[in-house]
Image (cartoon, rainbow, N blue to C red):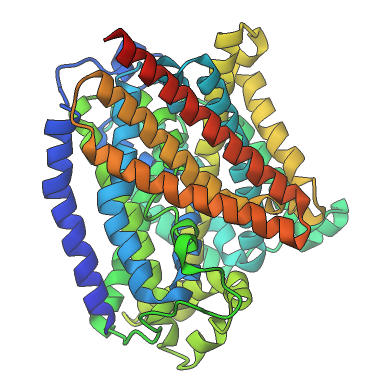
Length: 556
């Protein structure tokens, strides 16, 4: 098999999924109505509720959902073989992941832009809502802690990415003011600022930024210095109006990432390298069983519960028209899945373009690839881009910057989502400070930073990361449950939601149970306890929903 065959299969499925299946969902399942007033117009405040051009919102949504997950997950999972990884990424996206995101977005829009956790309370009771919100808060804190560490690590490992990663902040602010304050057609600043962003990559490649001397002067580890800078930035970014920084930053990030993806795919088509990875490898050395762990290792790119937080947290508050939900929710996820496919091509074919034995070296065992996933993506992607005549070092800067930008935009959005949830809890329980955006932003940053400091070197988030994959997919199952309950109440078709819901809950429950028993056998009682608590939360939420459904049946 060559890279061209993988690319052709993936994009044929994406095309059919968007043109056929998403159209069916929009008209027959969700019954989108462009005349229905969206929360962005109903509660327009210029801060969080801002009616937005669908292409700008697509850029925000795409980059917010696309963190390090669709990069690291597929890079690791191809150790089980490129065929199962590709099938889960592509078919999972078309029939489950994109449906999940689309459904969460529509459900939130139909409920005044409220979060998916708060909406659950309307259909499954107050207890289920509180349990779900607490689960979401815990996962958001974990995401922030881990992504801060990952970004800091990337800045340290790839110092050429520092200048382009930070250059986008002032350019995004200038873009926001140009479009929203000075009413400039967004196409004009888009072209200008994209050129400036790519110039910043060239500058960054020529002038790498090493903070080790400054960190030593301050008595800090370089990674900890970057973590402090990142959380300081996100504290302010999460409380600013979305049009000032978050939205334009994500839009510009999305465009330049799309261009980089195009370069990777064009490189794959032009050079058409041979896939050197095995098609199937069910028992790699040291790896857990392919079922259910393939479906947990590849989350973003095929299905991710975190996306429901973005769909119902920020995107639903900016959707100008219901008809835009199909583009933002469904197509946005296919964009992320295309990144996961590009990673599969880079790691199974691109990686061997310069060094024939590179794949065997990196994928010799589970322990080996867990440490080498990001370098495999950077080197494989850079090889594909440089096949177009672009300097190899500049190509590495492009790919490393892409990873940093995705992780950073997800972290920005995650902190803002934490603020929204704390605001909602403040309203529910009449806690005044929680309704203040600066106080709740401080709590979001403070709790995440506390987790970071739980382990030396800023690795606190990594303590619980082994259970995140299963917990994240469990969150996806519960988000599908909310959409199912909503559609059922509206007497709409539910089968396209019910089937993924049952499959996801089965897979995630199995994975979480195996995580718990494995950690118990290894004597890791902390992770075993966390897995057990999450399983109990899942069961409690589902039982609350079933109880409400039975009560409704009795009444009818």
